[in-house]
Image (cartoon, rainbow, N blue to C red; front, top):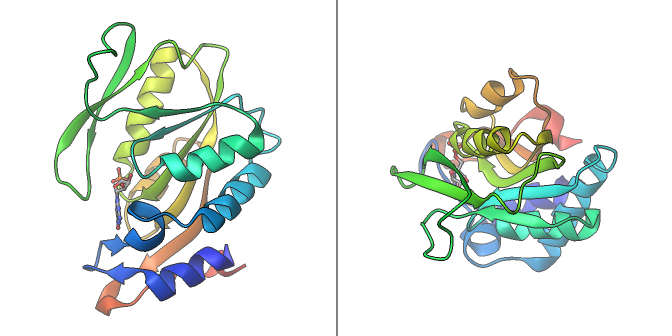
Length: 194
Ligand code: 5GP
């Protein structure tokens, strides 16, 4: 997605060979117009997948997931990273190690919001080593629901997550795929220039 790549080039900051900071439009301040276009792109790519629900993880997955949900006209559920006092029974849970925060969180979703008859689309902001997506997949399995696929705003193709998830036969659509962050420079995978 060209507008996203341009935004990454103009506003992204390469913090190290493995971490990209995009706080000005995705992870802290949010660019609603870009999010709308991201939602449209995911909605087009998954329009024939029979999606009945979108799931993501708080907090940075919520904006792109909500825009996609709006366009596919389906509800959006976000997994919580902290236990809520009002969220105590009938929970799906999974442990997720955070690539950027270097901590493990138990994430949870109420059993009320994913059902066996659901066809779920996972949306997240970044794909690095795949831990967040694997956690969400575990919860979809606990619910006995079907998976439509995974939509990622920014995949870092030089890390292992993309291959790990695709090797399971799961459809992964990323809107920007980064080949390298070496020497402070963002390089994209060839095919994502289309
Ligand atoms: P994974 O679970 O695939 O290893 O990492 C994905 C999660 O880590 C994403 O939900 C995102 O919050 C965070 N993350 C991974 N890499 C980056 C990065 O380079 N920049 C930012 N801002 N977040 C990242």
